[in-house]
Length: 194
Image 1: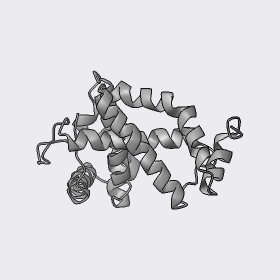
Image 2: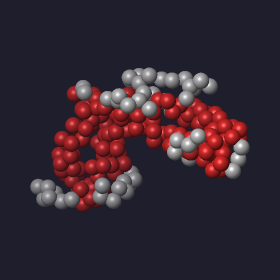
Image 3: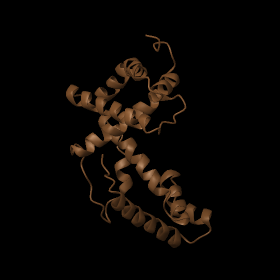
Image 4: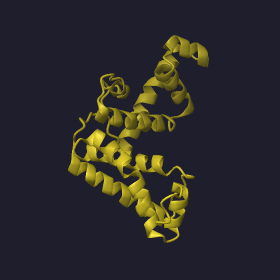
């Protein structure tokens, strides 16, 4: 097979240009790694097989639509697709506990569990990414206080000094940041879970 020794980027390009065999080479080249990655989190052969196939259906659709632009990083791109499909699987099958957002519930408390197994670590990583993206949507003053408090572990007194506002203003900004985050979580239907 002439494609066998070509780099991933060349094979992707060949497939996009109509060489169906190029995708077959890519699948065979990376099958074991991708399948093992999925199985290590799912621990069920049938489900792993389904997610593996769904991963490559998504790969094919993306390539055929001309949306691939990973600059030769084919395997990490495919792994990211598989990772996202596993998250979807866990969410759809209610294997993750769901939390209601209430005034007593701190959305960040779900991010601090140190005894995570592979499944919950995968989900935890996704939650971290979701929350970080939402934080970026907050007004600047609220985002600043929230980052100082939660990511830099600063006290409200330190935040007040650093931002040149009163402690009450810093506390108010934090309160509004959490209220706005809850609204964003509800709007975007993000599930927070352990």
